Amino acid sequence: MKRRDFLTATGAAVTTAAAGFAPAAIASKRRYRFEMVTSWPRTLKHLFGGAEFFAQRLNQITDGAVELTVHPAGAEVGAMEVYDAVSSGAFEFGHTAPYYYIGRSPAHGFFTAMPFGLTVSEQMAWMVSGNGQRLWDELNAADDLIAFPVGNTGPQTGGWFNKEINEPKDLRGLRMRFPGHGGRVMARAGVNIQQLPGGEVYMAMERGTLDAAEWVGPHDDEILNMHRVAKYYYLPSWAEPSAMLGVYINRSIYSDLPGWIQHAIQAAAAEADRKMLADYMSDNPAALKRLIDHGVEVRTFSQEVLEVFEKGTQEVHTQDMRDRQYARIYEDWAAFRDKVRSWSGISDQLYQAFLYRDR
Image (cartoon, rainbow, N blue to C red; front, side, top):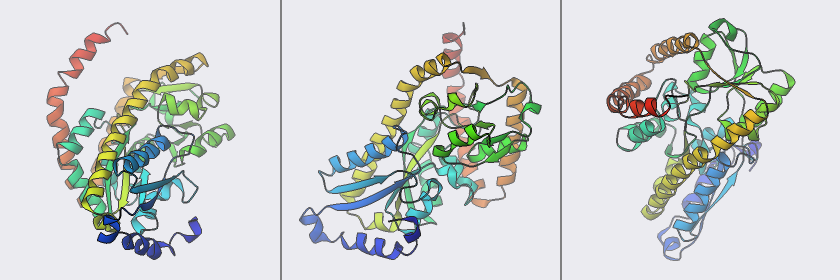
């Protein structure tokens, strides 16, 4: 199915999928053949590979009953069109970053990353033991979607720059790729934000249409050859202390599935979620060393620059609180953040302060 067929195919896709869910088909172990569009180029083995792993595990858990064909970005729909493709029913599944869709509602940002937001463990705790999944379900239901966490990159980086960022004025006028609410904060600091899929970032930097770009972290940034087009690599990732990704399923189609397949989807999602984080944590250290060997200079944002980002974050929150759904989710999210940090702020922080005292 190509993009030009996107809307006209919607009705047929829903009808075909629904027809396969008859009890007789279940009894005969008829296979369910679905398609999943993604926001990732095939070269990114943890992002696109994470979607493939989910499809593989779903097939294995269902003993071959569910076959899920995974498409890279651009093969069927554009990287930023995954949400609409699944919402319309043109495709049954999609794998993407929820914060790509903050244009629909700023509340989608809570389910990938928020500036100065939750760490990996805090995000997982909110989704699993807090109200995160329930609130995400309510947000997605309006577009006939249901979604589950499938992957987290862990802490990302502050981005690639072609000049040093020593003070806030160094940001003004830069052309930068930066997604989500972090990009909006950067814009308040004077940066000209451009939204590009990952597969287009290198070319834009090479051609000089971008001066800076934030992507993921050492492993994926090396694959995109970012070290060939930028010299300075900044930390920390104040905008994405973790980045949760999700598998979206058309809710009408999902609701018609037998319960055992719904449970299999959730089980495969949980496995894929854990694996992606483990892969990034395992592969980033060696990738960072190779980047440094290539001549990349790792820098840290100054306290003054980080304070400008923090102030901009509060301004973005204030603006978005006008959205009723955002305000309701923010209230729960912020309360959970403050609660868990009353513990992690003394447990994790004190341990790490001692562990890295000589760095």
